[in-house]
Image (cartoon, rainbow, N blue to C red):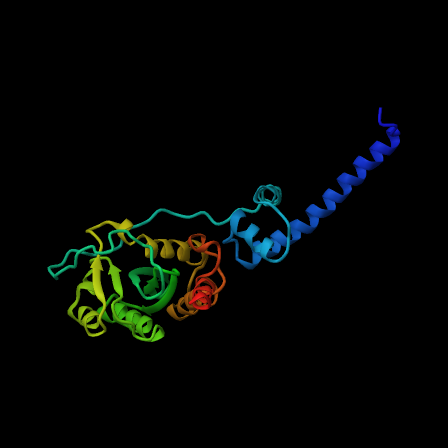
Length: 268
């Protein structure tokens, strides 16, 4: 009907298959490079965003198909685990945040919490302060023991890095470290408003819990630390060099926290 020779049609289909195979091989190489660079932390959506940003024309469905073909899967996440010790007689604050994790700019709402990291020398405890606007970790502290200094040092780092802003709503759980007189004094001195989760409810502080979840899935669970110093270096590198500046965050339109804040500064 179209006056096309049968041999010409088959030659065309073979050429089409050959080109598609070559294109898939090029895309596969790029997918493997992104997947490896991010240590298996990125799944299909983030890898697609990374490829598009670098000029590769591809859809999520195609990337997903190629990842299945390559046998690549992002690291699986685990369930939340409550670690807060709220069995104390210290005064607690009301839940002023009330699960409203939105903010229109930096230094409006911060949140903090503590987690633990296993090493062969014993536990290493990590306290962080996160700006809920950008999800950036603006303060952190690591010590071999649970103490008031752990959370106080993390807060002071956040205050120093942010130029000691006033009027910030700071949310945490009701653990004894956050209810301590020393910590509450810091909040009062620097003009921060205290908010605390309900007892035993990790979802009231979901953003920080989510960060710890990500940290452990992408780093802690994949390593075995012979000393606290080694664990400190790895966590420092993850937070400052990777999470804050490189890792794409789904809540921020698939860009890194510091990149998100840079865009806010340009708009302002």
